[in-house]
Length: 150
Image (cartoon, rainbow, N blue to C red; front, side):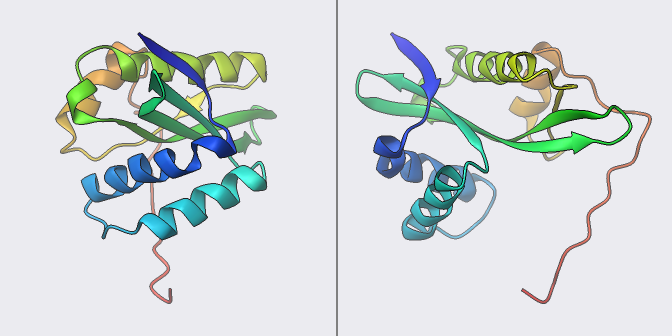
């Protein structure tokens, strides 16, 4: 049975393993120590909310959300930045359960909504998100400036 709950510091080692696999999916180098440090810092500073999917004692997926604010709406919004489920657990609705937990957080915090992005080549994600109620934003353009100094 899969349980979705908020992550705690006790989850950090397993969570770092999942986070590392997530980063590898997006073509980043493996860095378990960096993943553990990054997640630990986010948790210690309350800079993100992380929900985990568990089966027994094992973490099998997670989503990480960052708080943002919409000036025009004068409300908080949440950036659903990371979503990952171990390959052997995919196809069981775990991603949708994690998304539902994120929606619940948005409702509980009286937020304007959830924002996410995924690569155009992410076929699974581009099918999942519309089925979970997300709609592509056709009214605005999304731009990115990359700091090449770091």
